[in-house]
Length: 255
Length: 216
Image 1 (cartoon, each protein chain N blue to C red):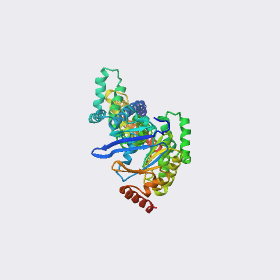
Image 2: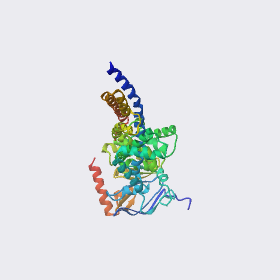
Image 3: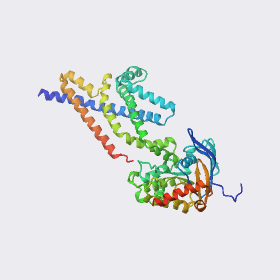
Image 4: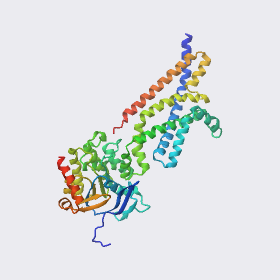
């Protein structure tokens, strides 16, 4: 391999995934370079969430191959727990651990998975909460936090594992409109710091400002991809145009 | 005056059984907790084989009268391993309670939202780590009210070890009544002691419930 070419951080090759008779991913391929922010859009049922779950092996693909930093993670014998440590995941409905404080949510992975001593875990967790602006909520339980705060804690929890890439599965869809801003701001900050991110989201403002690439998928495959300007101004495919117009209308109509 | 003398004799005699009753109940609950949690884990997270084993345990043990289990342990098993009446009775009660506790914890495990497991796995925890650190602490809190109920039931079931001669409250009440010929007095004292123990148990468990309430 030539030393000048940057190796992709993630390479997905022709993956298929079905649930029973429903074929969700039908030969999906995508390559992501380090520090790229890829925004995935597509109608519901197009396989976006399934794709994220395939990438971090929460539900491994039926066929096809995935490489993470030159390691084929779909190869037999790979320990998925080790792979997941390098892939941060943020969910639509937060999934904070209900019995732990914000601080505890970030600390538990540090202590159980990264095997840090308590003191060290505490300090690093505080640092991560600082990054998402929630040090003053460290001792609050999830039930005492707003949706936006919960999602920021979830981001801090993922960051604590020191991921090399982060997956966001509709991170603002469960939030009231006035709370989406604080989460998007944190994500924007992460992008500026050079975090590689794959974001499933219909927040078009975020896609325009932050995305290095917008990928439109439908029926389990990539229909079209390109820089946000091109995708929004002059998409090649009629399907892409129709879909993006529809969500852009919803976006502006909803505000 | 003879009544008061009898009362004091009866009370003092039966009171010595209180610690035995507490001991039997505590051992039975602890053994039942181990069986219950293990079997519930097997049923919710185990492979088909473990699921079947745990289901059979629960169905069979709940179908058999506890006294029969006590007899089996005391008259059959105790011939091969050295088991005192106390241990035979307590272990049998625990084995029986485990079946009921497994149902309690099975429900509690199922009541923990599935996203909790997914999120735990997503940060790199193994399935076992996720169960230990994330699912079990929440399931335990969810199980507390039903578990408290089971604790009072086991406390009262501890009278059953009487059949193999363990000197707990009821056994002692019967013994002293044979001596004083005042069964009403003896069993009234026994009843009072069970009432106090039950109230204490519920108070303690309610404190735990308040302390570890889980908000979702």
